[in-house]
Length: 383
Image (tube, rainbow, N blue to C red; front, side, top):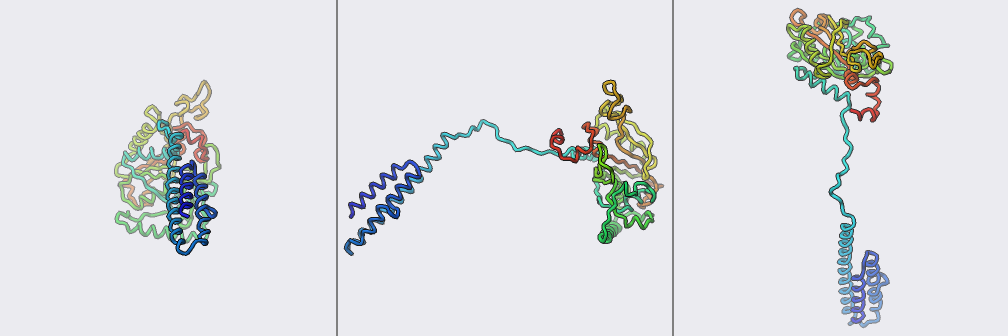
């Protein structure tokens, strides 16, 4: 019986050593240790042995089985190692090739434009202020000197919010905010306000960021020097130059002995910093309810450079005028000071407002405002 066990051991070890892949190794294992393997058949024949021989033969079979299992495990490790070495020889990585870099995104052109505008004015001491986009008519119109019959109050120009049962809750939150403002240490004396009860309950999407200026003046005594960027909403039909949602940035400076000359100097500095010192500038008289006197600032056309003609034809951008309107500005009307509790006899100031889309269109030569909102990567990748 021992001779038979030794024979099975030698044959199995030879088969294991000769196995060149996992399949051959598994076949050698099954041949020796499987249910129908040589050692298993040998164990089934132990019934013919005497009781004295069975323990000794069983021990020899177990020792042979353990030895073959160790040999199979060692052979399997050898095959794995050989497979890895073969792969390393045939599938070498060329480390001289550059890696594949993932595509990187970039800021939207409107975001880049706003950030540059803010940087220019921050160097002049202006600070960023935010305000709600869903606003009360009180702050959007009345305290900015818009009379009750002003066209901007019409539903065709302003998007009013019909909040139903939520109006009272919104009013309560606004009142709570006003109460907190009133208790601040730097609260100015109470202004006259509009005295229009209807405007205290009318809720709308703000048509400009000027309400931020009003709210800041309610909270802080002069001097005030702020920028108010943000989204605004108007009931405009969509075309190449109009969109019902667009972005603005407005500025306000209130202090003692502030003049129109200060306003012109700041805006000329901004235009030269943003568009270049060769950009021509002019101021035209205009009208805004919250400034007096008021003006429009124009810059030389970015297509014809102020000539009014391109290749002997009328410039399609400025219609031959050589100028493009950039922003509106003016000295703050004394009526606005009265509404926020400032003394118009002791302070003065000015404000300006510009559309960020318009600023970006002039710089990049874009002729359709819709391109900024459509998300077309072919357009956005140009920036």
